[in-house]
Length: 348
Image (cartoon, rainbow, N blue to C red; front, side, top):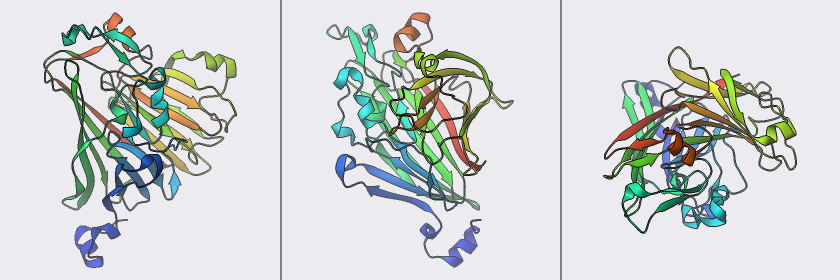
């Protein structure tokens, strides 16, 4: 238990003895140059905010046990990223960490969509890559630190990400991340604004990726699933269980599900991965009206072993289908949408 404010001041001349936020710069390999905020709550919860990667959350652990997924790519510097490379699949060369943001105007698989709203004759269409551009855009860091609110100390960071082009979209993401000193949760608040003056499409998704040692043979998925609306062909071909997980499998083909969830009485969707052997549970909750759709990404492939929990603004069919069926979100000039998500580490 963290001492109260006065007692803490008596015990140490620097709050960092108990926890805090520290800005560092990664210095080697593909990660070189990425500004990173190291959060330590003092309860055993520690996580890194990658300022130059959309302020996404990279490494995450509790009590020295990781729960954020680490892929072979590492946390690749955005300057190495080519959005249109490999027919739009180059996003997979930067795919790692607890939270990878997808959006701001496109999520899911890529393709060409009309661009007539931008009123620029040479730009008749826009070609998107997998999960859009946001996850590889650097943020402008507007502040970070520790703030006392009575006897409660809040660790926080805030930054702004701009996705913009002349005669195209002008979208702004303001992200605030908070955790309490002595606490076991991460709070993520995002506000996406159309900073331009043309109606602009908006799609948004969090790729929340959990890995070993939380994910292991016998770990399980918890969610109030009303119905599974869609699943990839690989589910029937492989028939790997998506509730109780198997260990790593060589050559495993990702299995993806769209689940319709039942919200709680408070209007929140909740999902979790539980490892009873470790006595560890990582849960995620968000307002159902903000992210009405949810995907489970099961990736049991050896060397890429992960499970993804994906709150989404849209169905799995993607951008073109959303335009066709009228479900696309069109942000008007200066219009905003906000998203509130909480991650919590609990005893199983």
